[in-house]
Image (cartoon, rainbow, N blue to C red):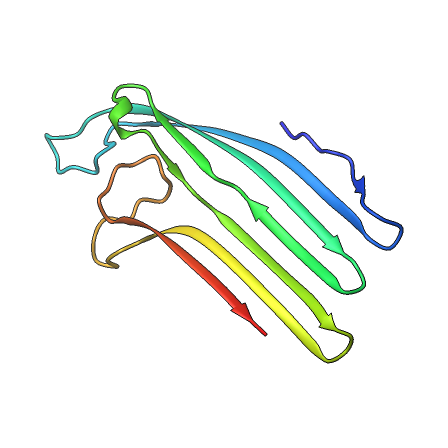
Amino acid sequence: MAIYLSSVRVSLAAEWKLGAQVGVNGTLTNNVNLAPPGQQEADFVLGVTPILSANLDAPRLKVNAIAAPTFYKYVQDNQRDYVANNLNAFASLEAAEKFFYIDGLAQVQETYISPFATQPLNGASVTNNRVETTLLRLSP
């Protein structure tokens, strides 16, 4: 299912383009903890991802941002519920015409601590190897 919002007119020279979508997936697993044989636990995991985007292409300001957090809901054990944040945003401002630019970047994503530990293919499996990383950059 996809829902799109119409553009909002900001001024005659620039137009924001806003978008929204929702993604839903379900995973039925017989080994939610990625445990060794004999210790497996089954569960159904519902993942809901709202995707919000904003773009602006003005003469002196460019903005491109997408936020897509995924909310994971475990049916058998709600103690495992969590949110996997995902953000990718970039902005560039021409502060002084054709002379001075300011660029900003923000990225948030889920990654893994160790390449040798358990790395599931999606967020439905429980692992202590997950970590959320944030990168912020501002450069003149």
